[in-house]
Length: 121
Image 1 (tube, one colour):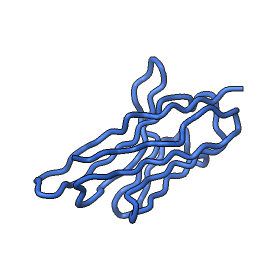
Image 2: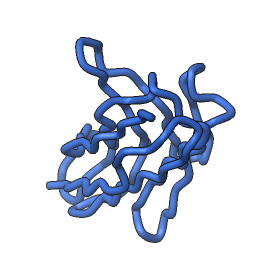
Image 3: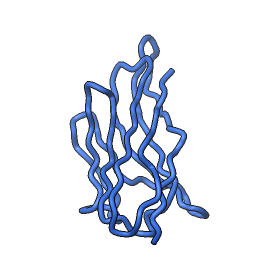
C-alpha cells in the first residue's frame, strides 16, 4: 500500500503565504504524478497543481503566478508554495499521486486525508 502524509495547512490573512507538504511512502516503484486538489464547501474538488514524472507541471488558471509546485524525488515529497493568498483559496487541500507499486501490475491513484487552508482577515 501507499500512504500520503500532508502538512502545512492553517489560517492566514489575505496576501499571506503557506507551504503545503505531502510525503508518499510505501511500496512505490515509480511516481507518475504528484499534485494537489482542493475542495471548498459546496463545490466540487478541483485540480490546483500537479507535477509529472518528467518534471513538467500543470496549474489551475486561478493559481498561476501565485502558487508553485515542486518535488523532492529523493524524499518522494511534493510541495505547494502558495503566495498572495486570497479568501477564495479557502478549501481543504488534498494531495494526490499516481504510482506503480512493487510486485503489482498497473498504476494506482491515492489521496491524502486533506489539510485545511483558510484565508481570512
